Length: 325
Image (cartoon, rainbow, N blue to C red; front, side, top):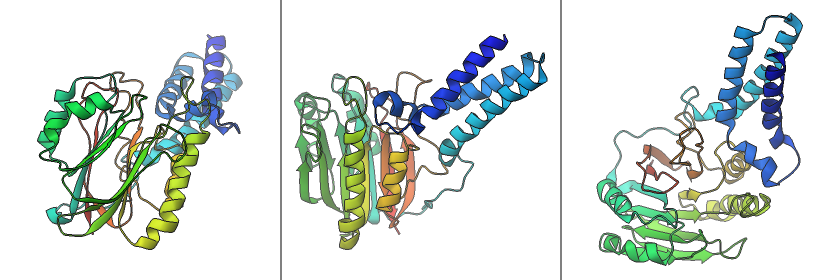
């Protein structure tokens, strides 16, 4: 039994420490994702050691200390995304509809053809803006029933899992579509006009992840995210428009890259103090983490934040409703 506890403890501690290595390789950076799952396993291991091994006090104390240290380190990253801390974005319980914007961010999974679920969801929620990711020409055609309600659109269909479409009830202007870092990996940037006449700057992004089937390293993803953060801090801030960033970042909320993005851009994360809102993987309850995000400038207060029902994709849609202060 002692050997089992030692092996389990060693594995969990190594997985906890792996992201500290100075490497962008996917095999290292991937362990930033399942921090919650590793923390749960560390807690279970701690309870098991305390409950079943009492033969050697020094060994028991050492195992408990090592596991407890790793658990505290994992909780350092996870804790902000729990109700145990104070939210950084205030709730607006009486929003002005004309100064509000509701966005649904939906990674549809290109091979998923259950379009009816998404259309029904959009009809129920009536967002001002729908952003679809992984949407190809098939999805563009299948979502045509939304055109009457969403006359302002940006189409960027691709068959490589990085297509993107924006459907908006709000007028869009200053539209830029760009493959900023990688060919075939676009982002959409535009200005939306609220019903009040006020304008907001929107950035919709979906960088490629570090993985054995795509980019071996996280470098391209990190360059795109941190490049956007610098642009927001330098250019967008000078424009004075409220800012929203939405998309599947292929990164978790608690990763060093996402934290650096927030620090450099000066944007807010409405999930802090409320929950992780894990959007991936929709089919595996024990392997979920927050890959889909909405960040915004301090110009907004939160009206509603929700993970919506599944639409046949491996991602849940994420709904965010914000209101200008």
